[in-house]
Length: 80
Image (cartoon, rainbow, N blue to C red; front, side, top):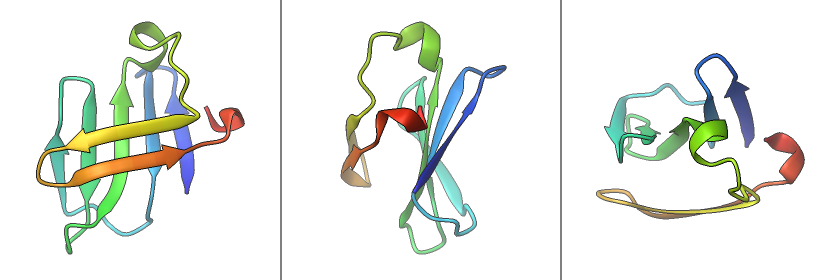
């Protein structure tokens, strides 16, 4: 697993797989999840990270995603 941050877009992407994206599910105006061809979770995009979530601790992320289920991630703080 790896993460990237695009400062210009103020977006963080959490890669859970390197498989090609087959479809994207928009969860909210700030969160989208990418699924592979087998509907496995491929990655999570979080927009407006520094502005909207400046005080958020991203070392633990729990998402309840419609049509996908619950996703819980433990991330080292240095990846953000």
